[in-house]
Image (cartoon, rainbow, N blue to C red; front, side, top):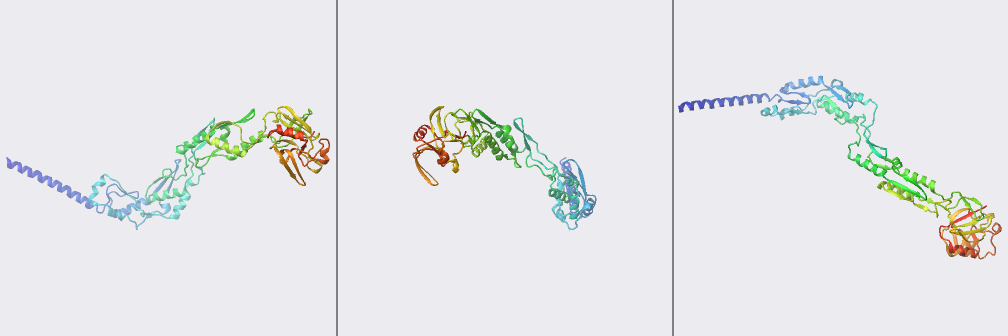
Length: 462
């Protein structure tokens, strides 16, 4: 019984050895086959050479080239075809495909059951470069009316900004198109998708770009600005409706605030509310209404300073109620802006009145500039620039010491004139001043002691 079991075991072992030896032999025979044949799943430059002999590969590749077509798929679905024959495409006998032969290890053929072997030999195909350039230049996708790609945009509507989706357009980057076609042909690929190969010019920023949201938020900040300018009892409101017209977005999605538009707006405010030199109807001490033109009295905005301030307000999205910056202000915004404290000088009557808080403080005769020598006292409404106790007045051919000096227009002012013994009447026409207003000592003294800088000085003729 024991001998029988040994015999059976020996037979089993022998069969196993024979089976293994057979498998090894078969594997070796197949390995020998792959010493001059390509592995399973072998593709070289688009040509399927699986299990094909090295010797037969040249003919197979030539057959592939003869029937080669490259389909070009555009963004809108239109297609075009370039054939190998149109560009003189042919097999390069001096190629380096042999490198693949040496890379292939015959004894490792079993792995090709489970793996794809795709190779690209750079010098396998050749073509006529001039023919390819001519063919590419003639493609219909390059002849279409060009629609430029546009960045995402922004539109102001109903108090806020909405994002306008970018436009992809249809403009093709010819260099990228040419390169994509060349590489696809050399690789033997039969389809080139222009969209997938990034052959189109594309917007720099789209609705999904991170900067898009930042830009919109900045626009929203700027139009949240609200400035209420006060001009006495009147006001001007500047808000997002106006500011939105001053905003633009450049190619880098940076928000541009138009400084020119800001300056124009401030200039228009200045033109509307500045009152320096405007014509005013003035009720004289004699009860007459006279029209007074010119002068330096009134409100005058500092346009440059206010424009700079407004730009900063917009950048911060501030809500502010304010007066604009002024170069010069008047005592009031109401009526003729003169108020009830002023100096009135009637050139025709050569007489001066000084009112303070509506009460006549002093009046008296004066001598004004000599019109016959071109030295007339300037007409218009001015204001007291400053006052000085003790001054020496100098000019062409004269020098005079005065006790009370009150200039209102350059070197033109009110002062006492101790050298004069009479005032008023027609004196100014023959022995008038160089433009100043000469007053008796008592008159100059009383004005000096009661007047403040900025008080209006009104010079007029009846």
